[in-house]
Image (tube, rainbow, N blue to C red):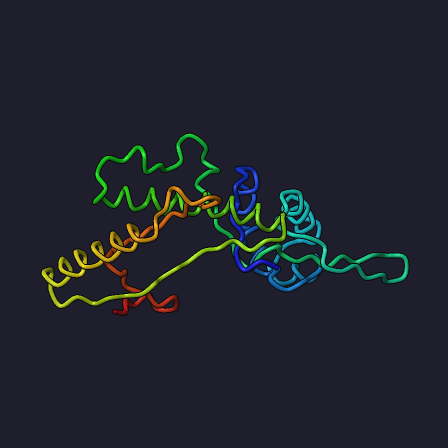
Length: 203
């Protein structure tokens, strides 16, 4: 099972976004039968089987095991991933595109770049898995608390200078067999976290 799968097919996205099917996918992080799922989610087994067939059709669940009880066969289904992300590419021509955003300091541009990242990495990762290869990626994720706006501006200047220097040092358009890599750096105010039980904000 994958840790996360990027859904690029619009029909598969619609299926996964259905509330009942989303609940079933969450339950299927571990193999389970339709009867077991029916008891968990409070639906008739026939209804659960209907939704499972739809999810299986779009490659979101698969058969984990088959058990025979007398003349009957019980199938245990499992989700193909622990969690899912819908690729912006599933929206077709209306998907966010950084090329259509002029203000590179805007939230719109950041969202469009993030959307492009999900789409491109999802496509590359799918191809790499099909070829049984690893996809070389790098992720740096941290939180910095600035004492003032001046400190934030100074950090931004130093970071930009450091990245510019590294890019100039290693970027080689003449390298035979070289492959271009996107480098994306972003910053935004860290959101407050809400406790899922009482809804209280935490900082």
